[in-house]
Image 1: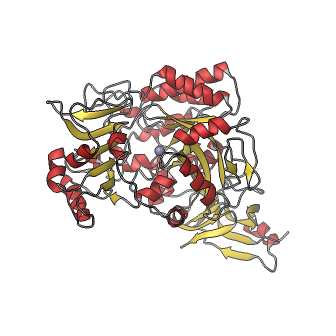
Image 2 (image 1 turned 180 degrees about the horizontal axis):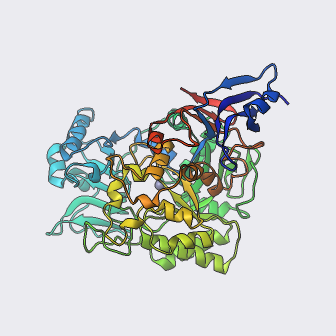
Image 3 (image 1 turned 135 degrees about the vertical axis):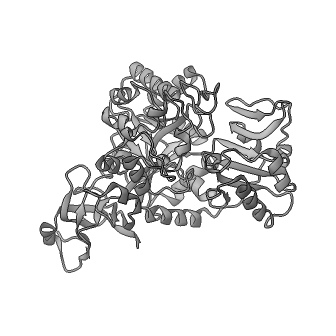
Length: 547
Ligand SMILES: [Zn+2]
C-alpha cells in the first residue's frame, strides 16, 4: 500500500522502541503506515507519494503532548495586558500607565503574567504605588500562577471590599497592621473582584486558530485542557465541542473538567473511562460530552492547595523566606476524600492540583482511600504539578499507579519557586528524577499561559540540565535523561489521557501526529537542546506547521 507522505533520512525516535538513525516514517491518511530504515520505507513510495527528505542531523518524534495547559485561558490572556517581560516595579507601573491611555477613565485594566520573583525588588507593587500610577482606572493584576492577584483602591471600591469584608472560604485578603486590605488577593478572594469585571468580547474562532498555530510552532498536537469550565462555565464545553471537535484546529484535546463542566459530566456520565478507541464523530461519549478522536473527556479536576510563588502551596515545613508560613490546604482532607471518591466511584479519572508536599500527600491519601473502597485497575488518577515532595512520596505514586502531571518548564522559568523552600525541602523541589526512578509515570506539560513561554523543548532542556533562565542550577540530582524527558512530553501525556494506543509514539496504526526537530535528540549535547527548533508539525497526517 503506497504512502501519502514519507519523512525520510533523519533520526527517528519512536519512544516505545529504540531510536533508529537514517530512518523514515510512512504515513497514509491520518495514520502511520510504517517506521523503519530509510531503505525499507522506499517500498512505500507510489506515484502520488510526497517524500520529504530530512537531514541526518534532524530528529522525527511523536508530536508533543502538553498534558496540562489551559487553551481557553491562553486565548483570553492574549487580550489582556502582558507583564511577562517586566523586571522591576517601575516597569510594571510604566506598562500599566501606557495601557491607561487606550482606556477611558473608569474602565477596567486587567493584566496577566506578573511575577514578583522576576522583579529586581522581589516584591509586589504596593497599593499606594498602584493608586498613584492609575488613579482613574480599576486595575486587577493576575500573578503568573493565577492563584494571587493585586487590585488597586478603585478596583477594591468597585468590588465593595473594605476592612470589614471577611475572608471568603478558601481565600484570604492580605491586610496591613491596621487591618486594611492591601489589595493582595489570595486564591478564592480573587473572585470578589474578578466577578465585577465586565468581560471583554473575544472572537473565539479566530483566537483558537491563532493559539493552535502557536502550539504547532512548538511541535504540540495534543493537549490536556486542565480546568475546562474555568473561563465561562458550561460555555467552555460548547466552545471546544464546536471548535476543537472535528479536527479543523489540528489540536487533540483531552478535557479535564472543572466546576459546572465537572458537575455536568458527573450528572450525565455513564460507564467508566479507560478502555476506548478513537470513537466516532458525533458519538456521545461516556462523560456526557460529544467526542471524536480530537476531543475526548473523562477526567474531573480538584484543587488541594495553591502555588509556591503565591506562598499558598501547602508544605510540611515553613517557606525558607517566610518563617511561620506553610501555606494551607484549600479544603479539609475529608472533603477532598469525599469528592475524589464520588468521581472515582462514578468511573471517572481524577486530577488533583497539589503543589506543596503536604498537599501531594493529601491527594495521594484521597486516591488511596477511593481505591481501597472501590478497587479499580487502570484508573490513571493524576496529581497535577507535584512541585515539592518528600521521601516516600515517589514510591507511593508508583505503588498506587498514580500519574504525576509535572511541568518541567517551571524549572526553567520559576526557579524563584524552588529557591523559596527551606533546607529540608529544597532537595525535593521539582524532583522529577526521584519520581521517575521510583517507577512512576510522568506526564509533562507547561500549564500555559502561566509562564512566559510553553515550548516543550525548553521544558525538556530544563528537565535534563536543571538550569533556570538566569543560569541557576537547581538540585541537579533530580535530572531526567533526554529519553525520559522526551517520553514524559509525548507518551506520558498520551497515557495520562488513555490515548497511548493511538498517540504519543511512532508505530504502525498510531495517529500521524509528528514533530520534526532541527537537532539530534538521540545523543545531543544537553546544552544544545534549548536552542533546537521545531521544523515541521504534522497533525493527523496533515502538515500544520513548516518553518
Ligand atoms: Zn493549570
